[in-house]
Image 1: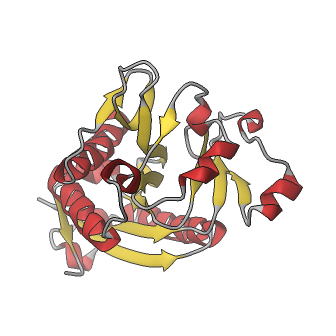
Image 2: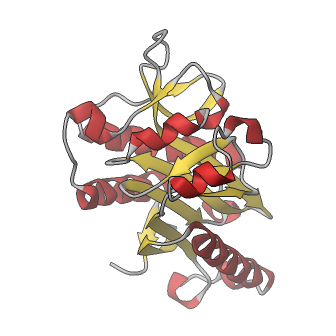
Length: 236
């Protein structure tokens, strides 16, 4: 049986506001599990998952095991760049979020999906790899690093097009991925992205030589997530 999910595109939203929203949905899903609502046959009568798509104003976020040394700006410089900074409870190191980037936050129950965290992260990567492929790019995985990369095994050319950093508690997921479509890549110059000092960052816009249709990219990525995780949208 498909896993039922409500899709929400909340547009340009502050990082902390979106984080609070994730926690609210997490609590609702957890409470539904405690009440046994997840086991009902008809997904429209039970607590289901949520997939959030969002763009953030300029913000740097640091994973729970990351180092603040990978942020190369002080507070005054952050303000000068109209950016904010948050230490989070997700996995991974530091990354940047901003306009023109598809940030995805799946609030899913991995028990209902019947998968573990490694398979879940691999599924997120595969969804982005397939999406990049529909734009003519060959996305790949990098040994020792999450996310989606171009030319990961070519010295001096490896560049990340999608960062992934998730949290799973009681088998319910939070946080997710950031796929660079029309992202201002200059903001990555102020960090060591994901802790790497010898690898670059890219976007669909940079690779294809011009602005891309963000809504088209969202639709392709959403459909790939649906197919890979066998999702059924509650809102068509």
